[in-house]
Length: 282
Image 1 (cartoon, rainbow, N blue to C red):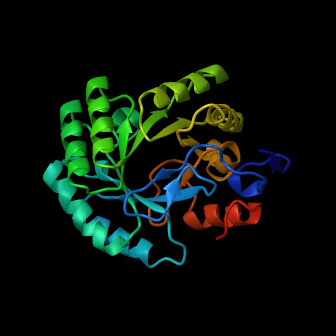
Image 2: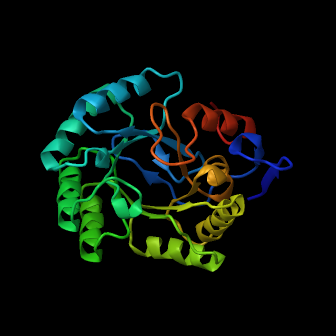
């Protein structure tokens, strides 16, 4: 795969990046249940978040997304926006959004405070809610945090496989290491969990950190079949949300209604840049 990335002098944001895409990602595609799309193939995907603090608010955001001119490939339901969540509440939120979004696959996420989210529940409470989502088939993909207790994490990954739900083993580091070898080692540790996809997000304190993460992701995708999501948060890392496909990252996160992470660009910005770069059509 050949990569051409040109930064304008003194580039200060993702909006001053000129990208050209001259190859395909190398990981094995993962089929998404009840969907015509797959993750990890030649075409990168975009996921838009819904901050689901209540069924009503989640449904309102879903209507806005469904009526937009450009649709995301996947919708992430950020269930941790409801800080008092339980299994019954999760069912109601997902039931309120599913009919509105049609055949757009849902990624269920319960992001803990240790990884930058709002969820303060115990590991057992987390596992109970995620178990319900998986066994009831409420989402096509499920986010499982790497930092969850290993026994519970492994149980959820196995349960997701049993129910043909795509498991995304994720890790968000707010104080990432300075050594590139640590980035590669972390990606390989995520891969060793046996999930269908892995996601590694770091807070970028400099633009160089974001590029280093992507280069590490490229090395890893050349040695494993599991699709990789690699991105850097914060303004300094915004460019990684555009350039990810050049380095094997199969999915970017972009906002339609509300942003779910610092440095997140709009869906239109990402898709327009990808079109100009020849990554995928608008």
